[in-house]
Image (cartoon, rainbow, N blue to C red):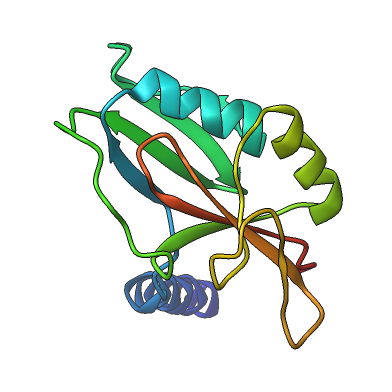
Length: 148
């Protein structure tokens, strides 16, 4: 009985210590936009993200799943669109960059490579193909075919 009690106490202490030293992990990213419906439509219909329940139900918040246990929160309220740096972007991987380009062309969405050359993509030194587009508020989005 004493050994069982010691084991339970040690397990509890280890669990508490592990929880306190757990490394941080990403929960969500948020973007602040002029028109949440337009932005949500872009991320759903162009990028291919699914909606997830959000608590506000006010038409000014949209939550989208971007990975296992990770979401994007689109929040309406920005007064105007801004200019953003391309190096500060969100990246989504797709099965085929060429297939994604066909979708962009069908929907008349401009895209460019890393250097800004229109209607083309970049091939990184590791062979990953990548292109950049902007969402309705000007946030940069990279699309690539990286496997990890």
